[in-house]
Amino acid sequence: MLSNIRHRNLIKIISCCSELDFKALVLNYMPNGSLDKWLYSQNYSLNILQRLNIMIDVAAAVEYLHYGYSIPIVHCDMKPSNILLDDDMVAHVADFGIAKLLGGGDSITQTITLATVGYMAPEYGMEGIVSTRGDVYSFDIMLMETFTRRKPTDEMFDGEMNIKQWIANSLVLPDALDEVVDANLLGIGTEQEDDDHVRKRDCISAIMRLALTCCAESPEERISMKEAVATLNKIKTKFLKDTTAGRGVLLNRPLVQQPFK
Picture (cartoon, rainbow, N blue to C red):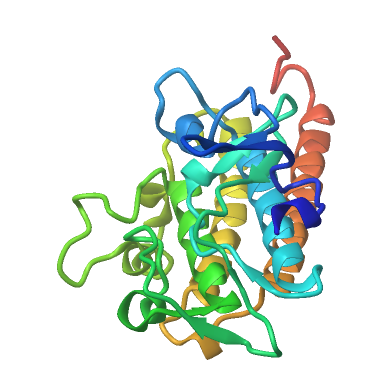
C-alpha cells in the first residue's frame, strides 16, 4: 500500500528487507525526530506558527489518504510519535502498521486491532468500527495536544474530565484559555507583547474550536478532513495577516514611545 501512495507529507519507503528471520521497511531518515519529542523534551521548542504548519502538513496527508487514492485509507493511529519531521521541519505521517483499506464502496469496516488509548475514536474503542471520521477524531485530539502540551492520558484527566471537556470549558470562561495553552506560546508584558498575546490567543481559540467540531462523540457530527484542512489554512492566513498588521502599527509609532533595541 505504502509503495503505491505519493504525498509530500507521507513517509517514503525506499526499500524493504524480507528474510526468514528478519523483515523491515527502509524509510527516509527524518533528522528532526518526532513531534512528540519536540513537544515534551526540555531542549526543544516550537512556536505557534511552526505548530500550525505541522498540523496543516499532517491534515493534508490524512486528506490525501482519505480522498486522494483510489481506495480510502484509514491510518487508525494518529498521534505525535507517528509524526516525523525532516530537515525543514516539514511533517511526514508515518507508521501504517494498523492502517485499513476501505474497499468495495464501504465507508466503514471493523477490526479487533487496538489503537492507542486516548486517541481512539469512541466507536473504534467500543465496537472496532473503522472509518475516515475516526482519523478525524484522532487528528483533532492531537491538534489539542499540540497547542496545550497535554497528552489525552495526562493524570489530570480522570472521571468525567477529559482533554475535550477541558478545552471546551476554557472557551467559555473569560481568559481561561490562557491557563490551557502551552505557556511557551503566549507572551505578556510590554505593549507589543500584549498585542501579540491577543493575536496568538485569537488564533489558538479558533484552532481549539475547530478541534472540538472534529472530535464529536458521533462520527456523523464530525467534519471531514477536507473541511479541517481548509479551516486550518484560513486560520493561518488570518494569523499571518494580523501579525503583519500588528508589526506595521509598531513601526509607525514614534521612537520615543517604543524605542527599538
